[in-house]
Length: 74
Image (cartoon, rainbow, N blue to C red):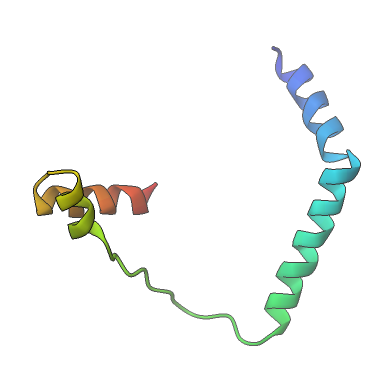
Protein backbone atom coordinates (compact mmCIF):
# COMPACT_ATOMS: atom_id res chain seq x y z
CA UNK A 1 0.00 0.00 0.00
CA UNK A 2 1.43 3.39 -0.94
CA UNK A 3 2.22 6.04 1.64
CA UNK A 4 -0.50 8.24 0.08
CA UNK A 5 -3.12 5.57 0.82
CA UNK A 6 -1.76 5.08 4.33
CA UNK A 7 -1.89 8.82 4.92
CA UNK A 8 -5.51 8.97 3.74
CA UNK A 9 -6.43 6.00 5.92
CA UNK A 10 -4.70 7.56 8.92
CA UNK A 11 -6.58 10.84 8.36
CA UNK A 12 -9.90 9.03 8.02
CA UNK A 13 -9.27 6.98 11.16
CA UNK A 14 -8.24 10.01 13.23
CA UNK A 15 -11.40 11.82 12.16
CA UNK A 16 -13.76 8.97 13.04
CA UNK A 17 -16.07 9.82 15.98
CA UNK A 18 -14.77 7.16 18.42
CA UNK A 19 -11.15 8.19 17.86
CA UNK A 20 -11.99 11.88 18.14
CA UNK A 21 -13.85 11.19 21.39
CA UNK A 22 -10.94 9.16 22.78
CA UNK A 23 -8.46 11.84 21.73
CA UNK A 24 -10.47 14.53 23.53
CA UNK A 25 -10.81 12.40 26.68
CA UNK A 26 -7.07 11.66 26.72
CA UNK A 27 -6.25 15.35 26.30
CA UNK A 28 -8.63 16.23 29.15
CA UNK A 29 -7.06 13.54 31.33
CA UNK A 30 -3.49 14.67 30.63
CA UNK A 31 -4.29 18.36 31.13
CA UNK A 32 -6.12 17.53 34.36
CA UNK A 33 -3.13 15.55 35.62
CA UNK A 34 -0.75 18.38 34.79
CA UNK A 35 -2.92 20.85 36.70
CA UNK A 36 -2.69 18.72 39.85
CA UNK A 37 0.74 19.97 40.75
CA UNK A 38 4.40 20.04 39.88
CA UNK A 39 5.73 17.56 37.37
CA UNK A 40 8.18 15.06 38.94
CA UNK A 41 11.81 15.58 38.00
CA UNK A 42 12.45 11.83 38.00
CA UNK A 43 10.68 8.50 38.33
CA UNK A 44 11.87 5.06 39.37
CA UNK A 45 11.05 1.59 38.15
CA UNK A 46 10.98 -1.23 40.69
CA UNK A 47 12.19 -4.40 39.03
CA UNK A 48 10.22 -6.91 41.07
CA UNK A 49 9.58 -10.49 40.05
CA UNK A 50 12.62 -11.28 37.90
CA UNK A 51 13.81 -14.01 40.27
CA UNK A 52 10.30 -15.51 40.48
CA UNK A 53 10.04 -15.40 36.69
CA UNK A 54 13.39 -17.16 36.31
CA UNK A 55 12.50 -19.89 38.78
CA UNK A 56 9.08 -20.50 37.23
CA UNK A 57 10.67 -20.81 33.77
CA UNK A 58 13.59 -22.94 35.03
CA UNK A 59 16.27 -20.51 33.89
CA UNK A 60 19.18 -18.97 35.78
CA UNK A 61 18.31 -16.05 38.06
CA UNK A 62 20.78 -13.81 36.19
CA UNK A 63 18.96 -14.60 32.94
CA UNK A 64 15.67 -13.63 34.61
CA UNK A 65 17.18 -10.27 35.53
CA UNK A 66 18.50 -9.84 31.98
CA UNK A 67 15.06 -10.55 30.52
CA UNK A 68 13.48 -8.10 32.96
CA UNK A 69 15.93 -5.43 31.85
CA UNK A 70 15.18 -6.17 28.19
CA UNK A 71 11.42 -5.94 28.84
CA UNK A 72 11.92 -2.56 30.51
CA UNK A 73 14.05 -1.33 27.60
CA UNK A 74 11.29 -2.18 25.13
